[in-house]
Length: 419
Ligand SMILES: Cc1cc2nc3c(=O)[nH]c(=O)nc-3n(C[C@H](O)[C@H](O)[C@H](O)COP(=O)(O)OP(=O)(O)OC[C@H]3O[C@@H](n4cnc5c(N)ncnc54)[C@H](O)[C@@H]3O)c2cc1C
Image (cartoon, rainbow, N blue to C red):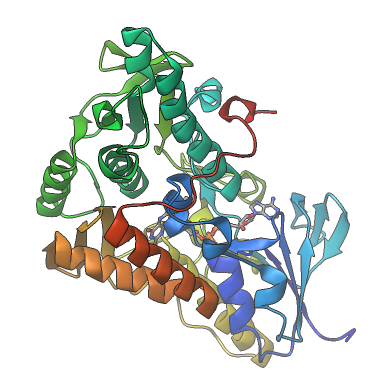
């Protein structure tokens, strides 16, 4: 054991978990550290935020996922400092030395220097965030039902989603569906169909990572669902009673944030040359320039291939995780590893029930066929048979009934998020 190289992996997301699994047959001892006890399937987090799925449908304990892999131990802990000079990592619960370090701590959203907006405009990255968002949305309808003043009531029925990337589009489309169908007939003093869903984007189109024709199709599909899409309009102020967009004010208590990318703060400890989002530039083998034993992968790394950045998406993180495992194996065996190459299998985004867009390396699909494609891909990539089964059953049920089973309000109030 003393001679067995110690691989320390920080982060049990797509990059870290795939690296750990790919090292299963390598003679190394692995410690996988994560500050949460579960691996989270972030692509379906918006479904938890909009009450379509429950937390265990899209998350699984890391300890359980790795129970059969004898060369790995899981540690629930938060990493605070990485000292590459001494090859030591400081955690809340102690220190760990390593021979190889894989940093896969991901990224989150950013408020572009307005961190005070976080209180009134929660973002979506973790299960806790999804619960906060779900509560905010469901409570807004409850508050509208109680309110007798028409202007105040309307302000509870205005929802503003900031950022028209995949998460913003998914949230807007699903909220429109909830207002138009799910909540119909359940209230006595309001008609939930009066709710207005605004999707605000500073850039010129929705889904900017998609080809222009699919962006245009996505916008049309959103509008068909009743979403008001505002392009080229930046948010300039947010508080608990409204938001300023493109110079005018919308009175609302429900701003949901889906804009910007900020890499994990650990990145800045690893490089003085991080990009504006805090992502770490890496060598062709995903290691740090002066530290071949330290790898940075997934959303935390900035990797350019054929002049284009490798996207911050789950397949890229998984491929990087599997790749660094081969690099470690090659190094131990005295071989020279090949450089990392990202394989792009396509780009999908859902908009709502039976509405989606898919770009399969130039083959463009939209509408119903794209939605089926999106649904099958997401169920297939979910971790665990139980999760696939429960998600399929939940979706089939809500497909036929328009109902969303996870509408129980509990947990922190949205305004407690900073506490
Ligand atoms: C709402 C949302 C929707 C998305 N939808 C899609 C989609 O539809 N398709 C797609 O391909 N991609 C999607 N993505 C992006 C995709 O989830 C990421 O690209 C992917 O998760 C990146 O993997 P990662 O391993 O780099 O980071 P993550 O998967 O984010 O994992 C990082 C892990 O590190 C842990 N961690 C962070 N800091 C510390 C610390 N200091 N100490 C210990 N542990 C720490 C975290 O708890 C987490 O488990 C979405 C992301 C979000 C947030």
